[in-house]
Image 1: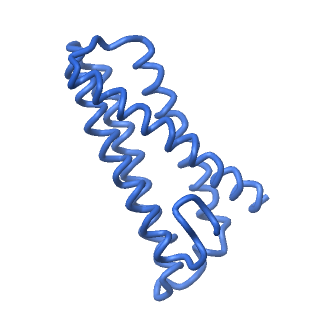
Image 2 (image 1 turned 135 degrees about the vertical axis):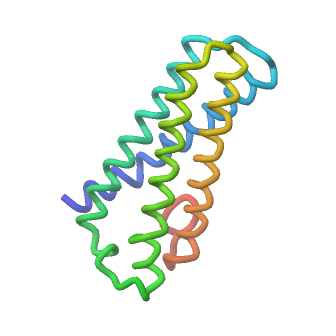
Length: 147
């Protein structure tokens, strides 16, 4: 069970990253280009939100099953997976959720795009920083997975 969930969590991250990058680029383009906010924009943002929440749920289950979270906090790997990774991903999910929720309440298209660009962009930045922290904490890891 653990290995299946770990593989799902590891593979799903690419979907989340691709959708999040696409949503941020799309929102920046809409905001700076003063484009209308279309149904396609809304769907991209919702799919990004859903994929991030699925990833978070997989990670939450792994948190309780993983032997890495049972390591002491004095070890770099244990601290990373118990505290750093978990808290940074929680903050990223909260930012994505708030950004999507706030954008739904806004009427003006540029403001919708701006809200998504800021909140999703901050979430993307936190996720990328967390990945770089992982490459330092876990021996043999690279940005795109196990080397």
